[in-house]
Image 1 (tube, rainbow, N blue to C red):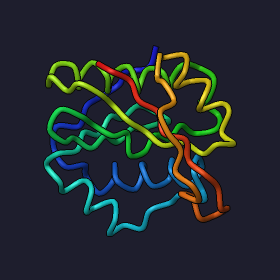
Image 2 (cartoon, rainbow, N blue to C red):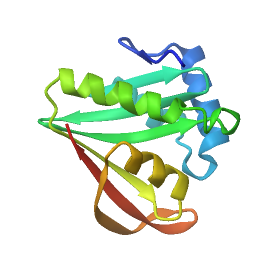
Image 3 (tube, rainbow, N blue to C red):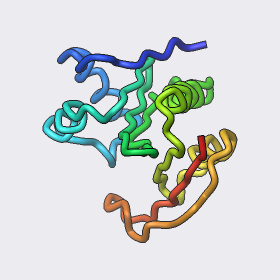
Length: 145
């Protein structure tokens, strides 16, 4: 089982480059520039979970949270890393008394949808043309914690 770490401090430049490398491999059409990464990481209301080959970034709001980004390197997929990252996030959110977690996923991303549904996320909506490259709807999922 992979060791999942909750980053309590701002990531080092080295870790940030590793996150961006994972993102490049796992989410090439949804890459962030360095400034956007820094903007999210500097916010005190974000949680960053890391593991060898993957990460998850969660934004907090009163009573709820949103999975902003989850990425697993292609060679590390189908080995439980995505589930481990999400379970670590859910556990951390429950300790913070967060009541629900939301996320958006490409309608065509059946593997991710299967993962979320296996963890008891429920589809609660759709965002038309949410993704731009390529243009696609996002499905909104929620889990009550």
